[in-house]
Length: 450
Image (cartoon, rainbow, N blue to C red):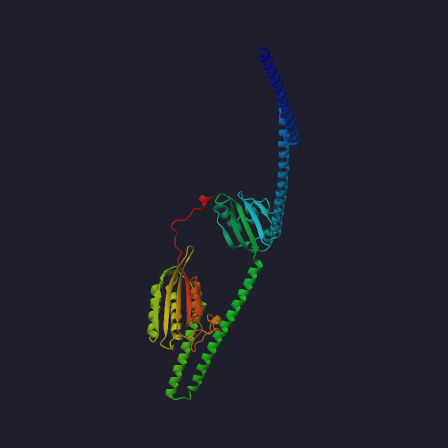
């Protein structure tokens, strides 16, 4: 029993020694692992020490964070300052360019603000207006209280109306009157209140004088042509009358009667030529009576049909009402229809004249177009520019005043006449007359937008 107890005690001692040894080994391993991880952590901490503070000291961490934010804000501030400097330089460059363009532009520029003060002007404006020191003056005082230019600027400021290529006369404080071309438009933001007016000025004085000289030359040339035409017609008629009159004393009674008839015929030709010339030369007074073109055209067609039944005359299309003189319009359309019938009277297969009407309407104005066409031989290209000249004719017995009278009548009614050859043969005259203005049912109030 004693031996068995000592053996058991020896086993317990051995187990205790092994356990202590095992604990020592485990402790050593743990110690080594701890050292390893601690050294690795210290290496990583050294790498990120510049970017993140140690958490062991909260005050240092907060100070470092604030320092980083301040540094970032400073960098952003520098970038904003750089961008602001660039934009400022760009704005200054644009402003300088705008000032140079305004100062050197050939047209005059005047800017009037909403209070009626001239806020800006360029040297060309001062030269055109003949006024120095326009800036910061009231426009009515600088331009003249009763001048046309002042009235246009005042109306534009009040209603926002735009004036394009208006022609006004301006009298500077010292000097002769000047003829100005004016364009005035309001300054506003979108559809809002008018903030001012821009006025562009061009001196047209020399151009107007040149146009007057050219017009005078044209009038003198036309007067010369008229005088030459009248003299030629009278000379021919008088020569014929004189020849027949000289043969009467030596002629038989029958021959004398025949000569007398020819003298009377020549006298009637002169009388007709003088009457046609007076129609062309005398001023026309155009009333505002309403004329029904359908009836006027129909009467002209009937009259030509009676005198020239061998020519077929057709009428179609739409004809409206125009303002003017019914007798003068009938005379113009009758002359065109008669000329067309005479031009195609000998056409192969029979002459044919067409009068076609067309009403053209738009938002601003309306027009009546009347086309008189024929199937004759057409008009020679060399004669086209001369057709409406007085005493120019392609007929053997024509006076050369018919088309000139037609053009004058149509022009006096506010229209115009054109002529051209048709592609399929023949010629056509195109008459365009303005339709009476209609009263608008509703007018948009510009004051509501101001």
